Length: 147
Length: 139
Image 1 (cartoon, each protein chain N blue to C red):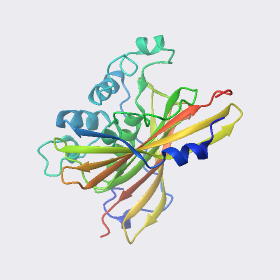
Image 2: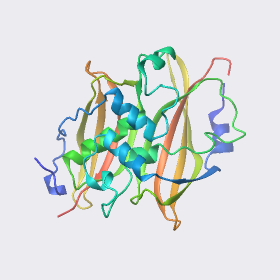
Image 3: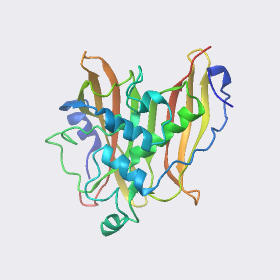
Image 4: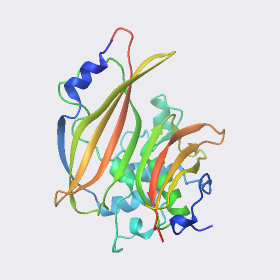
């Protein structure tokens, strides 16, 4: 059985990926419209406050899902959820940098066995180095009994 | 009622339900825009079924998009500062989704409203749930 406290001591809060992005304005509009967005600051690139919706921020993926030396936990990782904290508007077409670390590791046990949750946190910065958003990806792994 | 400022918000009120467009065409457009169009999991019922899925999936983050759209429809002046979604079960394209939310906290000094949010199917089964935090003008 995987020792959660051991994993936490070895891997939490250590940055393991840095990636640059530039959100495409047309894709930003397509995402907003498909989501049912009606406010023009999300659908009109000419709007003075044109910005990306949180769902687009949540779609940004780090180069690595987990640290390079993170052990295999035996099960298949599933997408357990996403969270986005918006600190400042993100204007499509401007450079961004995402820095990713493991923010939390925890487990839950039930009748079907133990589930391990890994929360990868990407902190996103604009060209000026301002922290503009945080995107959390929650991976869920059903532990195999002999893992 | 159109929500313009924090004074318009009442604790415990349910937001108007939003039934978004979950058609395969719209789901495919979303999947293509986020770069997940390859493979067919989100763009083809047939290909998704070959993977053992019940049909083409609605991407979980599209559910996040539905939630923020619902909030903006309820309160066009609101800024969504936080949204957390837990993917409990798959949403399937071409199946109805009902987006709901209830006000769970109101801070009139900061203009902050907290919401519990859910996405249910036509069988009243929860597919996605979560929380959101929005900020409204104080006056």
